[in-house]
Image 1 (cartoon, rainbow, N blue to C red):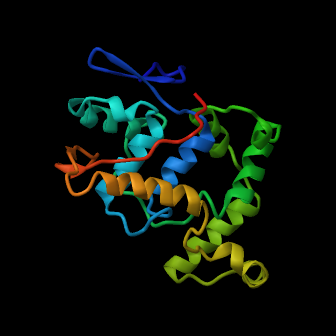
Image 2: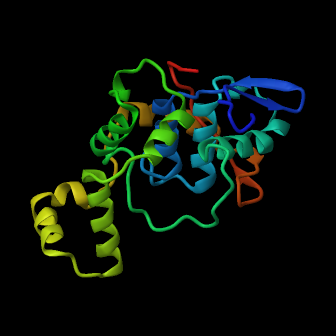
Length: 217
């Protein structure tokens, strides 16, 4: 990785250097596959396989002995180099469904519309994401948390929920079908002889992915 003030743009594994995709839009696509939103039918190993191929433009040429370390690098990159916080909590947000709310909050924190930027490193995006204060996104997440825990909503929250239920209720992902089918076809091409690779938190899991036509480094 890099020092505390650096923004990694390559992965150094053993004596080899690999290019990686670092723009926040590319990483949001990686996360869409990892969390199962893009293809719920895939098991955890298959989702990581797809994520690896999306993250590393030259993954097809990567020696298999580099896969475990490359997977760990991806996991650390997604967390912006921060120490792990243990098991993830309940799902309270969705990067795709909440995109308009997140974009508004991040853009407000950044002082500019980040969607108009040709490139923005994932770690920089996360820094602004963490700076989101009060607003529609915080309200939606707060209501979801109360509903999950069975807590009573305040009158204004109940009114908000009734008026914006479609935005509050988390729903399955339905976007990117063409890209999904292309990646699933690439994954199917590797079956049944999927090679083993280490996934964070597991041993002997399979990893496999699909290339992306465009990359932003």
